[in-house]
Image (cartoon, protein in one colour):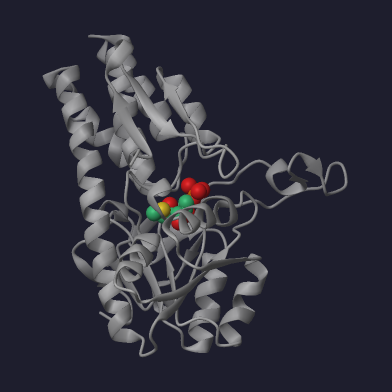
Length: 331
Ligand code: MRU
């Protein structure tokens, strides 16, 4: 299966991504040959999701090292532009830093480091999602499970195996998924465009719902557990994830429904004691005021468009990484 993000050494070398702006209508890949092209793809979310951004950061340094040869200052300047392209997902800067650490050994060492990170991402997400699947099988009595998720946390958000959707793949293989409710995830619709596409591809029964219907789905007893990913997890277990995650956690806590966060340990930022210090990316107003290019708000409408929110750890049943349960009530 084509990786979401990979390296192609032919023709001077390029980062190859599945173009997530084109899905679900068109499946195509893009070749990105310069750091500028990569930064553009990151900003418009052609490549997105915290683990995939980590890979993008590392491969971006490979591109910069090839473009600038021995000019280390220029490589570092490009690396900073890549790391700053999106501020919330800690994996992006971490991927850049890990690849940069190999720069003194030369461009081939940077490539080897980046490729090792891609393989590591595939492995740890499988492990983290297996731990979370086992936890859900312990926490939930009903079989098969009815799950609700938010945003896209599948292979498209990682290198080849997702986090929260990775849980679905494990449980589906075990015959333990009745259906998945996929929040559409306003305003950029990662749920209805990407998660629904992945669930259909995997043959998992699903329904897309407006984000605003999620709490009523929980209230009506349609959901056994909520499972989501993360963009940055503070040392105390507070979780930054796609905007709309926090209200889901509130509703899940109110209804006594397990709320499980799955992420690789590379998403944990121990430098931040709690979630209050997490920088939340604000995105362009027209993502909210236009739908499919058509204006849906009065001209000049002011907009609040944070891409992420922070869920306090006391609302979380478990934060699960490849190392097991890191935080939350189930710890
Ligand atoms: O803005 P996005 O699409 O990059 O946001 C992605 C999310 O919020 C995901 O839930 C998160 O990165 C975890 S992906 C395994």
